[in-house]
Length: 489
Image 1: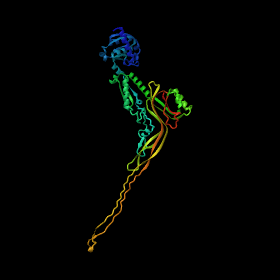
Image 2 (image 1 turned 90 degrees about the horizontal axis):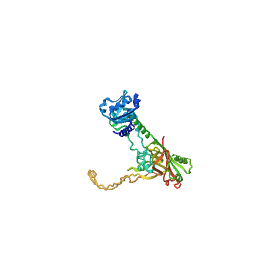
Image 3 (image 1 turned 60 degrees about the vertical axis):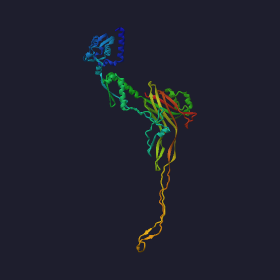
Image 4 (image 1 turned 135 degrees about the vertical axis):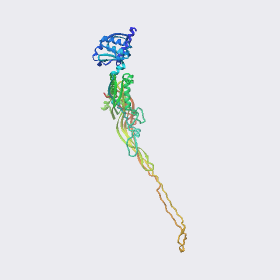
């Protein structure tokens, strides 16, 4: 082998040694009194050298016993080394030899022993317990109510006097879903699915995959504790991974949304800059709060805090129960009412997620505000009872023989007439009708749906069409929604 080839081989081995420190050699804390000798620099040429002779050569350089572990002498004796080691610590030289021969080394009673890598690894494994209960808690999504009339009619409960809200309470579309069904949160993973995800993540990112397959390393979960048997290096990697998962999962976001009626001129002054950095947001809010702009009126506001990626909502308003539909009960004068819950207020329905650069927040939001809501009633006729009437009358002639009515007590014919007349009466046909009141709703509602990316601590300004708002002069005023997002530090 040429000198140039040796240099290339040595460089490659050195790279492997520093990139993959876990494949060879114990921790320095495990060396005891051998730590200092193993730091000595060695320079040896090991070209076509058997493993046992290479260990003897390095051992003489540092005055230590370096031998093949007796039970593996036959397996490793034929291994040949092709290395040119120049001014390396003896421990690093042993690491290079281990990489070249699929072996590793350990210390027993002042002797450095070399053995197959899997065997040495089995001597170093230890069991540790990690508390992962925080990672097994599912973070639910909470879907805000739909304040529109369609949302009111979806919140119904039929059956006489029962006015309980149905299970559809709180359901509302997000990301363009107008069906009124909950579009996220229904696929929340089970506890076992979360356990499986964590186990799979550890196995796929820590250590060598074959160690977990061959059960040189093991991982089990019990009552929220992850019990792991592996090497100290792998334990360190697992600890860092779980810490990062906890830190990412535990990050919180504060959302603050406010509806304002503002002069249209204010929106024109923004000159299309609707995404505001922290300074621009603070300047705008202070201007609105101090009333420096005439005709500013705040309709509503909402603030909430949630986990990174969680969907939550804030609803402030009033709920009223009304009869939205009625069904006549057959053959009676009663009705079966359908009750709905009408809402008047504002809702902020939001799902924020911190971006990878940790400088922005990606937001999916749905927000609604009712400027005017009125409830009226109207009466409709209901109920019917059907009865039937009958009448019978008549007359006729009766002829017969009277017994013992003749001479000597003999029977004799009787000639005469008898008349029967009268009537049998039943109830007369008629219909019974009544009135029932049902509710009618009129509202001015502003609904905004958007996906935006906001700087951390900054805000976004969204505006809606206001021609239908009775209390807003659409030519001069505009309804806007100002949202601020910031990560809890």
